[in-house]
Every structure is written in C-alpha cells, then in structure tokens.
Image 1 (cartoon, one colour):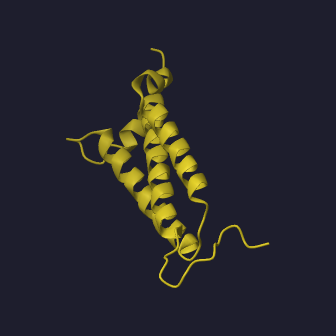
Image 2 (cartoon, rainbow, N blue to C red; image 1 turned 180 degrees about the horizontal axis):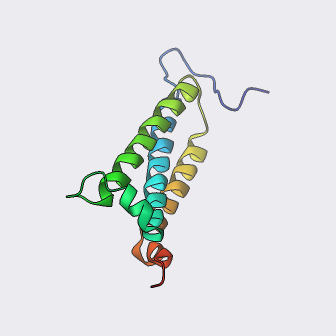
Image 3 (tube, rainbow, N blue to C red; image 1 turned 60 degrees about the vertical axis):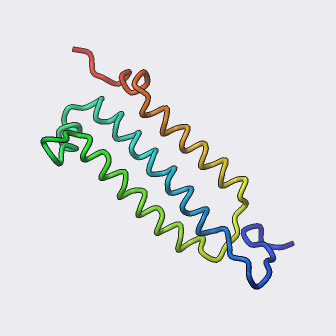
Length: 118
C-alpha cells in the first residue's frame, strides 16, 4: 500500500505540503493569539508582561507573539511537509478546528469568564 502522506503526481504537479503548512500555521497563530488573550484577562502579571509598547498596551505583545508563533510554525511545517501530499480534506478540517478554537478564545463572552473576581 502506498504511503498516505504522498500521492502519485505527474512531473509538473507540485506537492500540497507547503500549502498545508501555510494553512495549519495560520490556525496555530490564531490559537496562540486566543490563548494570550485569555491569559491576559486571567492575570494582571501576564497582561503587564505583554505590554511591549505602552501606547498600544498588552495588544502589542499578544500580536507580536502570535505572529512569531505563526512564522515559526510555518517554517517548521514547511520543512516537514515540503515534499509531501497530506490529505487536503484533513488539512482543511484541522485548520477549521484551529480557527474555531481561536474565535472562541478571542470572543469576549468567553475570555471575560477568566477575569478575576474583585
């Protein structure tokens, strides 16, 4: 049986792996942003640590760290998947799941649940 991560392709076809890496890394970056939003709401120490620019506030750290996570994930996944053909349906489902989690984590009704009681 053929390796499920690779498919037969003609000489001109390019593998789907680099595209899969881009999609999945975008989902990971979104989840990291969501986690940082929740952590900043749950802890004033984390919120203060994420304030890399006083005029922007903790949003500066949240976005910078999320972009770094996206970029590192993209590079790693690209190297791992560059010559492979993962199942596109599975990639799109996982990307959707990751984006769903990211939206949930950044939805105010959800992240406000973690604000400490005064």
